[in-house]
Structures are given as structure tokens and as C-alpha cells.
Length: 218
Ligand code: 5RP
Picture: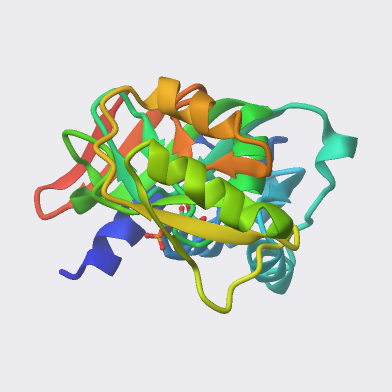
């Protein structure tokens, strides 16, 4: 079995959290794509979705699944998304696909956040995966200098613009011992839209696919 098979197994397991009449928040990335494909088979049961990226919206619409505006839906019952890393407290690093800001908005607006991933994403301490930060273009250098002062090594993601028209700094070399504290600290730098630590609003459930089957952490 490949890592992609494990991602798919986690995505299929997340279908158990979908209830009739729900509007489901949908994440971004290869694991979220497996969830979208699985959701297509039960699309008649749900009222619609809210997408965290243009890419996911396109895939959902391709399956004939309705994509709604978060401003019109109000809070959601369920958000399903992948992650780049998770610790045992279900604090995450997200944003490998660059959709972190919309992902954090939809996660924040959802009562339950079910995170789906392959087993390699579970770590003891966050930070081996470079931490993405979405920045307003004119603040790129300023934010990078502040991040260096915090001990990080920021690298501009080349040739990439977010769905919101901004840039991504990928920050290497951080050992994130206190995720919620660093999340707030980084978000306080002027020019930062948001960063990829999801600790202030962590996942509620983590479903990991792996060689021994599905592991669920809450
Ligand atoms: C996108 C994300 C993704 O959830 C994260 O990068 C994991 O991606 P994948 O499911 O492809 O491993 O945060 O912004």
C-alpha cells in the first residue's frame, strides 16, 4: 500500500462523520481530494459544501456537488481537511498547498474539524515541515526579518500566489514547542494574513491511515 492509499483510507473513514442535511466544509490537498471523490457518492444526502480553495471548489463542482458561500451558510457542523503535521494534541501545521487562510476560516466556522492524513503526518514536535505564512506582498521582506528574529529561516515560495492574491513564506528550522503561543505571535506581525499553525483552533478528530489500518485520535 502507498501513502496515497493510506490518505484515501483516512478520507473514506471521514464519511462516517457526514450526516444527512449537513453543509460540509471541505479542505484542500490530495487527502481532501480523496474525501471530495468519496463525498460525490453520497452527495444526495448533504445540502451542500463550503470550499477552502478555488481548486477544491472546482473539483466539487466537477462532481455536481453544490458549493456555497460561507457568508450565506453561517456556521457549519463539519469541516474535513488534511494536514502537513499533527502532534498528539491535534495541533497542526497546514498550508503545504497554500490554502491555509481559507482553511483556517472554514475550520474556525465549523463545530467539528475532522483531520484526515496518512500516518507519517503524526509527529512529536511540530516544525520539521516548513511552516507556511501567508503575507501581503508589500510586507514580504519586513515579515521575513521578524521571522528571522524568532529563530526561523523564511523562504519565499517561488512562482506561487494564494487564492487571496498574497505570497507564502515557508519557514524552516522551527521547533514549535508552544504552538498556540507562536501562532498568535506570528499573526501579530503586521502584514501576516495568517500562519499555518492550527493550535488555537486545533482539530477535534484526527483520522490516520497506515499499514495497521485506521487510527482515530480525539
Ligand atoms: C493545503 C493543506 C493540506 O491539507 C496539506 O498540505 C496536506 O496536503 P495533502 O493532503 O496533499 O498531504 O494544508 O493548504
